[in-house]
Amino acid sequence: MNKKNIIKFTSLFAMVGLLTACPGPEKPTDEPVPVAPAATASAEEPKAEEPVVETPVAPSNDTYLVVRGDSLWKISGKPDIYNNPYHWPLIYKANRDKINDADLIHPGQELTIERGSSSADVDAAVEHAKTRGAWSLGVVEESDKAYLNR
Image 1 (cartoon, helix red, strand yellow):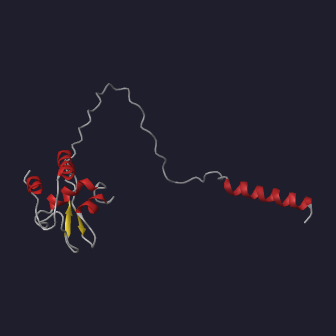
Image 2 (image 1 turned 90 degrees about the vertical axis):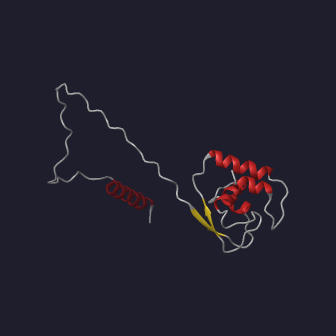
Image 3 (image 1 turned 180 degrees about the vertical axis):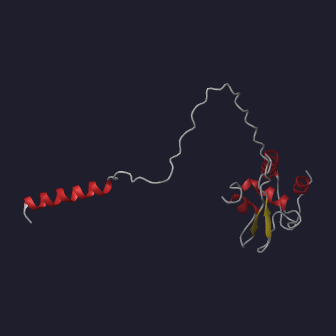
């Protein structure tokens, strides 16, 4: 291909591209076109909007199935749980009927993960997690009992 043919081919290609990329004239349709209502010159009072009353929806709880190697600390630190390991007491309290010792959970346990805890509940959980003190397996610490009874 010589230089003249390349230029002609390129020009033709560009023209076809422009023609296909640009929309053509609109085709008339038989459908009516919506028209904005004309402004009225009457002195009608504007209607007051009714207030929107939203009914609060209680957040739904989730469940978590314990697997080998889990702890309340690890579970609460997961991004899809609480994303904060210091929130483990929230799980402990929500599952007080399933967990005797906060330091001992078992694979296969289905734990409730409460959503929508108040900031006061979260603050109390974090405070307990940070100040709990020494712990041992198989023993329910007095600080855990006090936290559960709040």
